[in-house]
Length: 451
Length: 116
Image 1 (cartoon, each protein chain N blue to C red):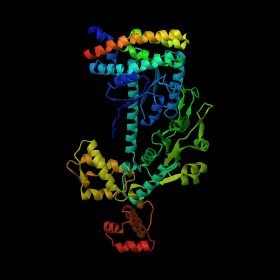
Image 2: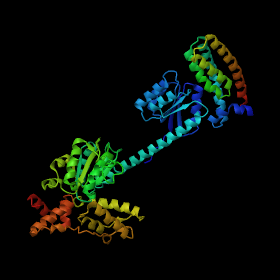
Image 3: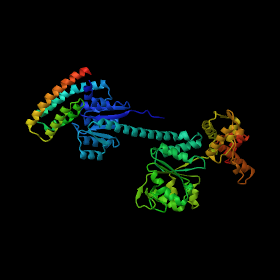
């Protein structure tokens, strides 16, 4: 949403009432300027709460010297541009004021109005750019408001939302686990863009996508001449994420040597670029993700235990889509709306048969797979409805793993009932209806802890 | 009229040739300058060099907007005299000269105001 642009607020501080009024009228020729005139330094300082965008300050004020007014302004508003307008051409004074933070120094002469006009216009351009930047940042924050990007209302997802809320309100390291396609990076982004670090960078890096020999330079950077080909200094991802968030995706794929180096940086909160000597402080928040079970990787000896405990922080486990029950339909509805719009198609709805088909699949590729299935279905359907024949699943997503482990018929029955209970959020009625068995059968099995 | 336009050239440049605003600024100047002059005259009488300097310095810019270049030069001279702690008699002499000159100029400006 675009913010209302307010006019550029200019303070003219000038003890010569006539000249002050003249400057005010001159600057007001641009109707995007809102000019306030003050006769003394005291009045100006008292009105700083109005948050001017620029101050034109007469150096020779009757109550407080111009340099003192400048110093006082800079204490609370170091970024506020202050233009000194002086009746005296004194290089020493000018240099001293510019060193003291003055934006510019003009001598009162025939060109003053043009110089002031140009300086104010330049400041306006900078301000507009800053506003645009802030708007873009707000837009991103809005985009990543997590209930906007992570769709669903299943109990398992509500648990995720509760944990995300905690992550947003703290600085704790977050470890996200979940099958591929469950939205680990989206969750990481949502945490970052809803946290106080939102205005700082979110830097993602996929460890598995970078060869082992390059990961160190990617993370920590290097100095010019550190190795053949290092023609310039490179800032690493840790430094780039300063004040913000570093997202290490597929962290379990990191080799042992790199794990040691990462542990050191996390412990010391500082790093040294490859080939460098200077120690660089880092205050990036870490969010890590993996599709593997890190605890198991520690047991297998593939992941350092000390690093594991450093990274564990607040664990968030993203449920696979097959455990999110009716979220499948909610997400399908969201995706079909999105893709119809993107592909210039009329809006479509799913028939009952299509909905049943969507619900009958296990989605090994999770939300990412559902998204692809729905986009294809939207394109394949010609009318207003998406029917079951428009929906095709490419992966062997039917619960084939039922057969992976040989068991008795009773064992298969248990697995099937457990599968559908998970799918329908433990709704016994829906499960019984789907499987064509009595509810009491399921209740009995639950009571006897048979499933 | 052409002479008058030249006289106000600097002022017009500041106000984008808006003659109504030029007129308003002339009124403001004529309303305020007598008090400034009285103040400066008092400082001269008291030989308050610091304030003479400040006052003359402030006034010398404003008068230029109405083509009062001679007055502006006199004010600049007075500022320098105060800065150099000139003889009180010289300050007194300059003050009366300035007052006489200013009275004449203001009279002319008041007449011009009715024609604007």
